[in-house]
Amino acid sequence: MPRVRKGAAVRRAKKRELKASRGFRGARRNQWRLATEAVRRAAVFAREGRKQKKRDFRGLWILRLSAACRQRGVRYSEFINGCKKAGIAMNRKMLSEIAIADPQGFDAIMSEARAALA
Image (cartoon, rainbow, N blue to C red):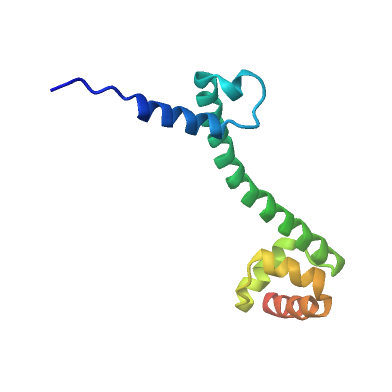
C-alpha cells in the first residue's frame, strides 16, 4: 500500500488559519506558526469577552436601577427584596428599561415593592 501524504489537507488547514489571522499585524498575519498561535489566543479572548459582556451589562442595569431607586428614596437592595416579596418577576434589564422609558410605571412598581416590605 503506498504511503499517503497529506499535502492537500495541510494546505487547506494552513489557508484556514491564515484566513482567520487576516487583520493581525506583522508576522502574526502571514507566518503559519505565529498565525496559528495568534488565532488560538484570539479565540480565547473572544470567549472571555462574550462572558464579560454579560457581566458588564448586568452591572449597567444595576447601576441604572440604583440611581432610579435613590431618586425615590429607596436603596437598590431594598427595592429588589420588595420586588421578590411582591412577586414581581422582572429581570434587571426590564426594570431598568422601565425606569428610563416609563417613570410612572416604575413608580407603580416601586409602590408595590414598598407595600410588600411594610
